[in-house]
Length: 397
Image (cartoon, rainbow, N blue to C red):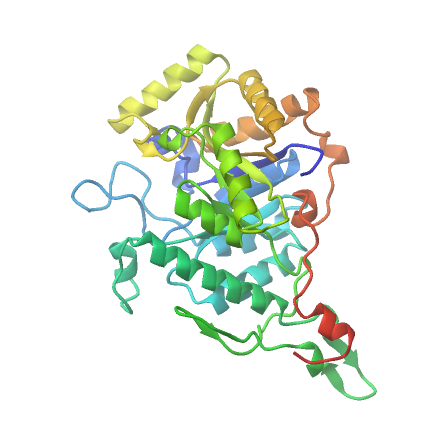
């Protein structure tokens, strides 16, 4: 676990509250523009946030009780992976973690797209792996029936994650030799076939993208239910847990992840981040009033079990700093915060919360923050290729 609290901002449209677009001002008109995303991400980068996650889905937006798109909230989105690649050149240190589904996306495209982001960002790419459980999503692809059998979806997700890792490892770090004398651009013995035959996916051959700066971009996974938590321990480097969901407390959730690691025989203690939805006001009363106004505009409260799968906090910066300190004391590596309003709350996270955490001794100031790759910033060990030992012996796998 890093000696400083990890702070991640979760970006989604105009914010996580369904009525956030009503208070977003000009930003609500630019949700499908690169300018919107660049402005928001650059602010997080400049002021010291460790990483941003970018939400994505195979649906254009949430659906209402009749199964139609809910027109009261933001409908329509840009591809998260493409957005991350587009904003990468404008940023310096922040990790870029797009959501990419493992359910209908071919592992080859997942692997190469994220490797490309890792190259473009100079080692700041991550991946939030997500399953796509609905018939509506499956219908877009027309290749197979959809369903919500979670066990099957997560078994498939494990296989996809394994193939992705194999493709990430398929090029050695030094596979490109550029030997002008012999006319060889690569050493073929340093490129390995990602051989895999599973129940859901199979792969034969190597990635088209040379090994990226991190080797394996860190994988984030949301452990908001038991089957998702088991997948996260099997396949992820960073686990996101949701206090309040299903009545689960922060201490219990952390204990569950550590228990699953023990059962799995893992000697790695993954960074666990508490995933919280926040509205930040200048006072507790003001924050509560502003959340109530959003709920009234949406026609329903946004809370655990009512639109949110985690605790929704109408809070102040000092209260949030104290909460994060308490989570740190429990053993959490940090937090992922879902701003209910973008840019209002995302700006408060960057401009007010970061300095508050510095003052509390939970983070170093921006000037001294590490600018290394994302794995290093998260306190995750460097990725070692499965072919490293054979490569060092000059043996092709």
